[in-house]
Structures are given as structure tokens and as C-alpha cells.
Image (cartoon, rainbow, N blue to C red; front, top):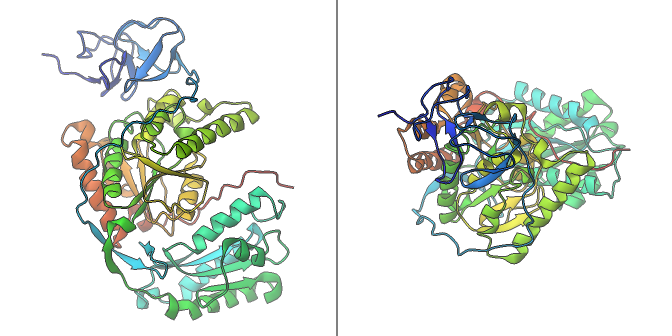
Length: 505
């Protein structure tokens, strides 16, 4: 009997996913078919003859239409499958909430803050108000690392400078400035941050006083401000900044305590996705997210353009009509936003996504939504807004990973879970980022950048539940202080990337 080398993901799907590279004439192992053309691993192959204009489904849901007749056994991709916008979202359906796994009383070792939130790291943060003070902020962090022995201060996990390209030549009372201040404020108040040094130039639109007021912050023994023009220039500000951080050390030092998993807020991300992301890593993460929700924790799904076409999978389990309506409104806004650039949301899949077998944004979205598991959607929040509602939360953001994660961290995520099929190099200090490979081949090729392999699902050696259990245990271990691959490699500062849409003067 011929072993199947093509995976059909739903009984009605007219296409399957090649598990190996298929040469013309190679048996597919489905209905006695052979490959009519070469089909790369991870790409789609027609399992029957397809008509011109026929809707093509994967996982039982539409991903596009055939742009011409496609013979059974042929490669199905950009040359013969085209995007078609989904039908109207005016009808919002709601099903009963799914049954979630029982809570197990899982715990981790975290830093308990005065407001009750819990950090997974305890960092000193140097935060510039504007691009013009970014170099000084970076040099303060570098000088501090060179002159202060943090090994002798084991209750502080490090110091970092989060530089950015914004803060001036925008309306001081405009939406772009408000979003920047909300993002910077979210980092300054983050439970992973024990102390903050704000560094300004002095003449920027994002004046430090306005920033602190908008963010609800004030100077204290854990928050200091240094302004370059007032200190007397670069060298003087670097010296003053280092001393300000030194003065914070006694207040910042903290000790881990055992707490329940309900204090975990996990940002769910995928980047450098391939066709196997939707088959292995993402649904396994979804099961782990369901377990976290059952424990009383919070999972944040984001990347609004990357749920387009698959939003019904969230709307069908949104018990609050107002929450559902807000999600629909965000998708409508993004469609209009894409038109301003003369494009559509189907411009989202990258060349790497397509090389990995993803053809349209509709197909990509099916994998992206899988990270949200089956929990009810409890809230929808704006970019960098606090994710204050336990359970599954959706945060509006672009699909670009660094920008999206920056919003999640500003909103309170104290752990990031990042799946990849092509191999993403990413970190998001001051929050650890757990990276998960969708295939064993990727895990072997880029093992130094990856924390966990979900490719065992494709290999057939583990189930989704097996891998989900490993993911959840990994989250608890990392939250308790075990360093991730990206932390060991020094990722995290350059990946800070606030989203500030709007006019720059």
C-alpha cells in the first residue's frame, strides 16, 4: 500500500499539502493520484480537477479561487490561485463557549510588583523621549554595563536602552504622539521593569513633562529624568545617567516569589510563517493558550491584517456583541488603510511566506488565528492599550512582528510566544520571547535561535496535545528565569519598534 505523502486537512478540501518534495509522476498516496507537476514540500497539490473560478478551500475554509482550470495532481499556488475578498461580515454569529481544560494550579517564580502584577524579568530601562536622545540613551546603558558589576547584584536581570525613531515633527496633541506616549508609558510601567531613566533632548515635541503626564508617571526613586540640553551635552548626560541608574539599584533589587499561572500574560506571535505553521506550531500554541486561560491567565492575539478572512473563527466564539463589533470595525479600518497605499490586505504575505507554500492572506490568516486556541474572545483593545481582561484578548496591530510585539509588551505581556516556519531571529527585551519551530528541519538548521520544536507533529512522533504540554511547561520555566535563545544571543533592544501612523512634518 502506498504511504500518503500529501496531507488533506479537511475532508472537503480539494487540495492537500505535500509532506515531501514531489517530482512529476510521483505517487501522492491519495485516490491513486500521481503528481502532474513538481510540487515543493509544504505547497498545495490539487486532489481533483478544479474548474476556472472554483473556490479553493483549506481546513474547510476558502483561501482563494482558481484562475483557470487546474488538473488533479498539479501544483496549486500563485500561478493558478488568486485572492478574492471574503463575503460581508455584517452577520456576527456567536456559538456557545467551548469547553476548556481544567486548571491544574500551575505556578512560576516571578517578581511581584506593588500593583499586583508580576514580572518575569527585573530590568533597568533607559527610555529616550525622541530619536535625538537615542544615542545618549544607548551610551548610558553601555557605560553602565561596563562600569557596574551586575553579577554582584543578582536580583537585577540587566539594563537596556530602547531607542526609536520618533518623538518630534508631529502634532504634540495628535494621535501619533498619543500612541507613542502610550507605548513608552506601557514600557515604563511594565512589571518586568524595576527602574526607568527617561532621557530627553530638551526641544522635542515629546517633552518629558507632557510624556510623564500623559502616561500617568512621576519622578520617584524608581524613575529619573535627564535632559541633554540641561545637563550640558552628551558626555555630561551619559555620566549623569549612569549615576542616576546607580542610585536606583537598592530600590530596584527584587526577589522572585512563587505565584499562580494566572499572572502570565502571553503575547502570541508568528513570523516567517510557512504552510506547516498552521499544521503544527500554531495549533499547538493555541492549545497551550487554552490551558493558560483555564488557569486564569491572559493570551493576547494581534496582527489585525493577519486574521483577515479568518475572523469568523473568532467571532463565532465572542459572547459580547460589542466586542465582536469592535473587531469587525478594526478589519474594516485596515481594508481602508490598505487602499490608501493602492493595495489590499493580500499584499501581506511576504516572499518567504510564499516560498513556504502560503499563497494568499486568507490562507495565512487561518494559521495565524490558530494561535488563539478555542477560548472565548473576551476583549478587543487598541494598540499598546492595557490587556486588563483575563482570557483571550485581541490587540489591534500591524502584521510586522517587531511593531506588533512592541504593542503587546506595552499592553502588559510579560512573555511572548513566537512561532516560525522559515526561521525568524527575534527578541523583545525586557520580555523573554519563546521561539517555536514548525518543522524539525528548521529546528535542526537554526537550533541556536529556537527554544522548542513543534515539527514532531508533522513527523508523527507527537500529537498537538503532547507539544502543547511541552509549550506550557516551557512558558512556566522561562517565566521563572530560564533564559531564552534570543536572550542568550542578545536580541531585544533593536527590535523595539513603536507604531506611530500619521503625518510627520
